[in-house]
Image (cartoon, rainbow, N blue to C red; front, top):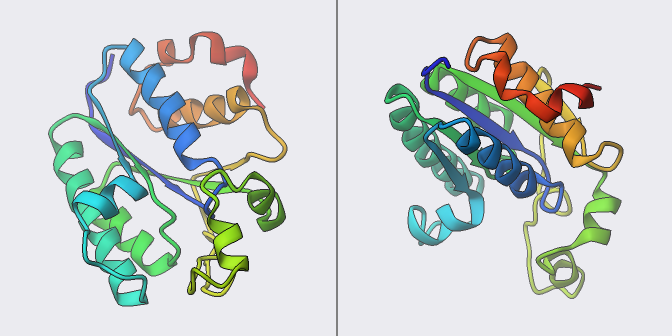
Length: 188
């Protein structure tokens, strides 16, 4: 198996499915013997970016911190998965340039579906006026213009979305085709 490091950079609204996809990809890569780390947006904010707010400047700082860690892991041969909203194109492009071996995955899901899922209860808090500057509601989310992969979690199964991502990693030479396994038949 190729032992090249790479970063999978998930971006999408809260509730779109970034963490679910990150965990599924992590599990598959670990089955293949890869060293994998997930940088989940909520965990990063608790540990690495504690004290940052949600201004554009603070959000960009948060993304730069995530990108720095991804860069270190990537250059040392690890598979790194970033699962943060990363709402601004400019910051995501900066991360791409900084990291190098980078796969941007747009986890596309309509706001209405994310609101229905509301796994963390955040949209309810927004509606109650308890959270302000919430991405996609009263703060912008800039959709990627040229993502490497688009998964549509309201239309695809988890297996179909994972297959798309694994195939893209194989096509880039970051992984060998044996990683596909049961996902081979799920190609969309």
